[in-house]
Image 1 (tube, helix red, strand yellow):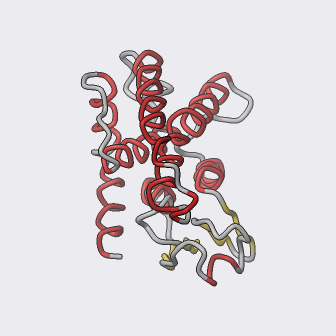
Image 2 (cartoon, helix red, strand yellow):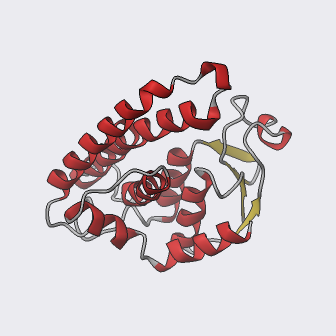
Length: 199
């Protein structure tokens, strides 16, 4: 039994989706960022956190990859070319896709108002659009980023796609929009959304 801590309306959703994909037993403890429940286990105050027995793991990407590795699904085996390609996609997602989304969010509502620089937001959207162009080229005609197997970076990209749309940004039609719709049509995603909406 795992315990997932944090609000499902944040990056916690990624872990929630991952747990549903893997069909694992877990408890959800909703907690907002910087709440005492979070700062007690993560000094940065960021969510999510996952308890596995007496151990705690933080950072949504690390948690999802840990669960995938531990349970032997949503991932390729370590030390293989397929895993290296998967890790490349994960890094691309964090560096090129999520980064402008997070910077845009920080300067929209996360940072104290006197620290926000609204002028940076068009640059964030420009960077995101460039990343979507790269995504389309790299993806090509593949079903998922490493071929026919749904892996952790697909889940992360699916989450980022929804985040972008909620930010008022547009996904490019065709390859990218079809891919994001495909990963977000998975039954586990829909189950996770139902849980998120009830929280």
